[in-house]
Image (cartoon, rainbow, N blue to C red):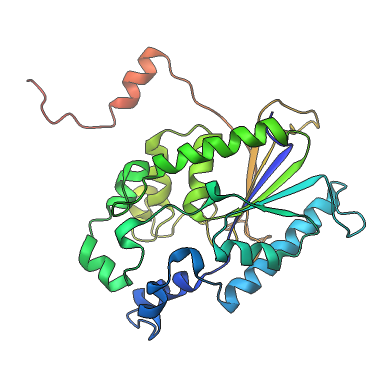
Length: 291
C-alpha cells in the first residue's frame, strides 16, 4: 500500500519564476541572461520564496502535531521526507524546518526542458511563438527536445512503486515542482489526458475564460509556489482504505481563503462502459467525416 498520507509541496518562488514575472510585465531583470546560463537545477529561491517555504513549514508542523506526530520537536520516524535534488526544492525543504530526514530522489526532478532551458523569456517566445501548445497538448507536449509530462510519469511510477513497497506505514512529505506534482495528480487520481489540458487551461489567466466562462482562473487547483496537495487513505469516518480516497489543496500563505484552498474531496477514479467511451470521444471533432 501507499503511505498513510502523501503530502506534495511545490518549491517556493525561484529566481527563474521571478525573472519570468518581470519579463511578462515588460521589464526584464538585468540579471536574467546570466541567470538563465545557469542550469535550472542550480537556481536559488528568492527572498519571497524563502518566506513562502517558512509558512509552508509552519502549516505542516501544525498539521502533523494535530494528528499526533512531531510531539517533542525531535526527529519523527513516522514522517519520511523526499526532495527533488534541484537546489530550489532542497532550499524549500530546508526552510520548512521539519524535524525529519530528507532523501533526495532524482525521480522527483522538474521536467527536462531541453533546448528551452537556458533561454530567456524573450528568447523562448521568439523560438516557440505564442502558440501555447504546452497548455493545449498537455501531457503529450515535448519541451524543446526535452521531456513530455508522459515521460515524467514513467519515473514517477518507479517512485510510487518504491513508496508502495517501503513506506506504507508512515506519512510521506515530498518537495518538488509544479509539473511534477501535476503528473502525480494525473496518476493518483487517474485523470484522462484531457483532464490535464483542462486543468492547465483553467489555472492560467490567459485561458480561464475559455474553460470556465469567466476571466478569473481556478485558484483552488492552481499549483502556486509552495502549494500543498495532500492525499490520505483515511476515510471521512476514520477507517482506512487500501488506496488514497481523499485529496485536498492548501495555500499556506492564505490557508483560510476559500478561493485559494480546496478542502477534502473524495477521489473518483473514472471507469467507462463501452457507450460511455463513445460518448467521451464525441467531444473531439472528426475532420474527415464521410470518408
